[in-house]
Length: 272
Image (cartoon, rainbow, N blue to C red; front, side, top):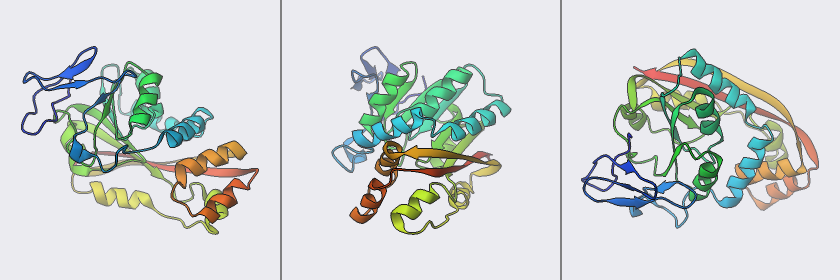
């Protein structure tokens, strides 16, 4: 078990028991009924309920179940297969959300999986999806509660990218796989909501963030065109434009259906 106690000055190994996680010094953390353990300290929280809301989690879950993440999952699966992912390999998903990608990958390759997220709503959904994975509430912007060099693979799927932390947690020959929205991701929806769709190369920024400790090994563009009905468009609004102006939300809410481009840059890095 690569978990370590997050109490300041401790850092002892954590044992995952049926109802709690506990370290040799007696620091204990209860496991929620749904199956995740909360290792967030008060300074890790910037809000009373940090991370995604229940509504956003449910909306994203519905989209993924309808196949809106299939293009990314296919690229991730091919990338892992090409790098010898096998039973017992350790994998960490930073910002795991409701656990769709980690659960799918862990089942496919029989990985020892760990998922971290700020949102307890997301972790509740993740633990219900796959009870064999260790789901943990922790802040990826800070030191994550794991031993250095604990993981063969670390994923950051449209989530936080703390390069120094990823470097510390990966084994010497491990891989960090980062997914960011592509230049034309949801272009049709963005044009409908905002009046224009500005292309942004987020992959270049990822290379800057991870540049000193990592070298880019492979970059794949995952793409799909999907038909989104009114329900799907509203779910996309809930997950993508939560901070949009009222006028933009009203424009999307008025749409009955449209074809939408889904694109993502899937990038595999190895330690430099």
